[in-house]
Length: 333
Image: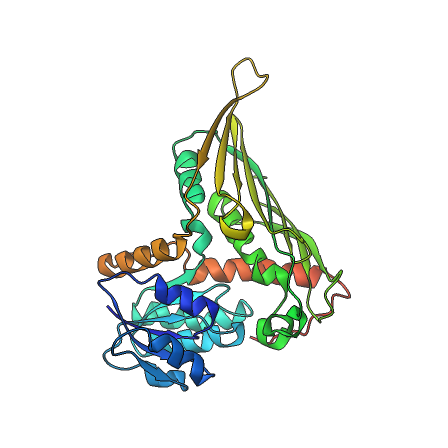
């Protein structure tokens, strides 16, 4: 495929590096032309543009959208209407309402649109999904997830601290990954409670989010997303009737990626323990792109669709509504 990238910041560069050899990056766009030029300059024949509409060319097959949150839905919609397949970064929109016309356009156009929830492609989580599908821990009861970082000096001045651009704070940023994983393992949630709050960072969005989600069958997801964690953390524990799976770390600053399988014995007592360790290199971005390309070739729905993103964003919006007095400027869909 011939690929265009809209949004050439950190994530856009990660997405470019994740392209496999049989695909060609032919165009990049960014509101800061210098960033587009810097990325395009590393790929032969790649054009750099400041106006993202110029990369929706006839010779482009697929578009990767890695902009700020306020532009995710508009760029995705325009790419779909131009007949392009799309890989759009999470959360895919600032609100669930913003995704309504995007989903309608995608159904009409028949193109493949995948939302970039790359954590699903981390090896520990891939292995966890396999073990659960194989019945390794029996019927699932509940899960507990934590995901957070300690921020950085000046973070409150970045676009993620602007509710009109970002749509929300930490719960929509990292927390959306936890919500997506909870839905992947437990399914849809019938009841959403929790709170978001600002404890430390001097900005108008939340720096912590706490969610208690319940499925119609009574399974529970207890989630905490934080940018006052000080030491980066990722931890997801999934409890079944015959065992537990615990994922710790994502590599890099989050620590080594590990999966521990605690298998309950018939006589109870201490469980059998199997530990899996994974290479430190983060290949999730490449694995996600490979999956996206396969779905295009085979014309099948990808993991994490626009509807998945819409459901996850709707859960975060419910937490915002539950948080009376939370300083957040509403975003109209």
